[in-house]
Every structure is written in structure tokens, then in C-alpha cells.
Length: 229
Image (cartoon, rainbow, N blue to C red; front, side, top):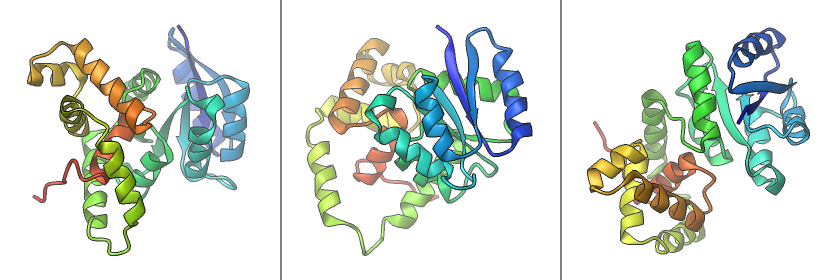
């Protein structure tokens, strides 16, 4: 199966470079380009894209807004968004994941990293590098003492968390730690298929699009607490 990739960036030269790289792979192809977020949403639907490489800073509708629009559209439920950013750890980390992005990639990444990111996202996995994950945890830590927190939202999260079985919670904790299904299976002494089943059930119960959304929920619900080093 060929992975259909959409490039969304306001720099034509950068899009051209990404196109050459992606089209050089036998298992993927660039099906369209967009220079702003609104066009990215429209082209994602028209071209039936599987993965959108989305720049954050674009004129008009930016990458964050476009990601939210894609995530909210039932017709684009299969589309995965990988955010491309100049700075991998910045104020956009949590915002992008909450908007529905599957993960991040710095624009200075090596070609193999970019290609792997596309494959990982297309497979429904979270793409969070160690440095991005540290930034994510730090952001949650900074927000944890927010006196203006929404009690109704906290209650809703607690109720959704209560729908998980004990094993599903355990698996969710490991997902939030960045472990793969194989690594979780080894920790829990079960099969990777069993872990995958628990992950899928947790996503269904929590309304998560992918593993990245599970990471967000794990921290926001308080199931996982960031450690202070």
C-alpha cells in the first residue's frame, strides 16, 4: 500500500525538496502541496491524503488551526498530521498534540528521520522524539498549578479514565512513557498483540485518534505525573 503524502508549507523551495525525497521511496508518494492551512485541509480531502507534513507558521490559516480542522472532520478521520517546526521543543508542542497532531519533527531532521516519521504516523503510532517528549512534560508541569483549571473538564477526564480497566490503565502509563507495543509486552509479560488490543480499546474509550492523543490524556488526567529532575 502506498502512503499518500500532502506537503503543507509556505516555502516552495522546501516543499520541492520534500517532494523529491518522498517520491524517491517506493512505498509513498506526494499527492499534493499547500501553501497555507486552509488549502491543506481542502487538499487533504480532495487528494485522500494519509499523512500531512504540516508547517506551523503559515500565512492565513496556520498549521495549528488546520490540524484542528482536520481532526474535527469525520471525513478526514484517517488523516495523520506530522508537525514540522524549526524548533522541536517550543510553545507549540502541547498545542499541536491537543489539536490532533500525531507528533513532531524538526525541519533540521535527517532524510531518513523524515521518511520514518511518515511511516510511523501512517501506522497510527505517536512520533515523539525524546527532546519533544521532555518539552511536553515540562509544559504539563508548568500548567499543573494553574489556578484557573476547568473543574468540569477535569471531571469529564476522570469519568473517561474510569471507563478503563486496570490493565488498560497500566498499558496507558507505559504508552505515555514512550514505550512501543513490543517493549510494553516485555514489561507485562504478554504478547504484543494483547498490548495492541488494550491500546486500541483505550483509544476507543477515550476518543483518541492515535497514541499521541493517549499521551496527552495520560498527563492531563493526572494518571501520569511528570517527574522533576
